Image (cartoon, rainbow, N blue to C red; front, side, top):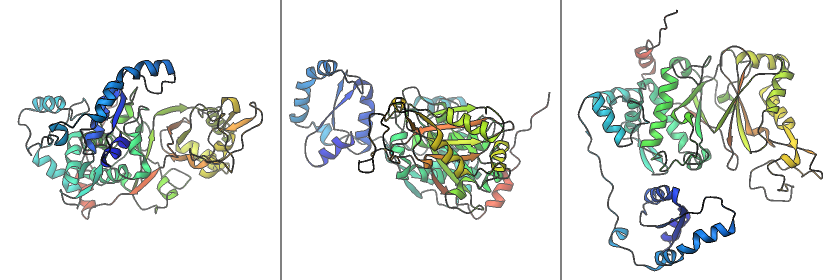
Length: 451
């Protein structure tokens, strides 16, 4: 779609042929680039179809429409598209139920109830940052929505987040606009990716971010509120809506929010943000887009049983990058046997193997002289299809994180690389009144009655 828009910007007519299920996506992509008049033709041919007869049968009847799209003069609406509706500052007044129905019908929620973003609630949320409400953090694709601090606060209120969560949300928004994240692919992909947000530094304890049992389960306002607020920011500011821009075939429950804190106090290794060049006393957030997860139990509770089960569960059918989450006990077992994080990464890269004929890139020959579009560490193709090939050719495709409850289960979270996906880390900037702000909200914690 963007290629066609670029052609139109060069004063050349263009027509885009898309599968009928992607027409809405194509239209919103054109609108987001300021060119809603690009002509789009729906085709019945399924994406990635390799049946030439089926392609011919689907495209031939469209030839007249294609010619017309390239030659017919622009209509008045195409020359001067109607301006988008501007919402007044106060969009609705009513009861809690009425507000939620109103917001839901306009596609502003995630399907669950939200807290109304009143002037008073938004003002309180803004106390979590020293930045002015109209400060522009950037523009978030695909609609190029203007990410202001106030808009972040509005979505944070709706998600049930706290003002102390604002520094994390601002840093997360900055990460999404970092080109190294490939948010333009992962946010709308048919592959159904969800961002996993990894939190490090003192802010974990200030916000009571869960780093132990049930790290990915609901029940903690920091983990749940931050994750949900980011998902609403993505939807309402970035403009990624299910079935319109987000074309995830199966979807992903992680899209509502996956926030995990590292158990730095019990880890034998440096935390993730230190691996990425920050100081231990810094607070930081890192993102990894994943579309599959596995909970793995070691064959034996020793380094051999832990590492062997990991290499046996690496998916040979896809080129994935992985975040591996060890709980503190498992990490200590490995550390006591002399394993560093880098050792673990290199072991998995070297020994997670399959026979060449089972490898995804069996038909691709990687040599030092050949181009390498996948960003792979080059490896010579075996002569025999029974010789083994590494599934993860580069240890940099793996990150190790320590979190989770007791016992020795591990989490394996994978996502496609798109020229090698980057774990982008951002330092979280705290407001001047941070300690006072933390004290104000520190007692908002669940107190469970024991049966």
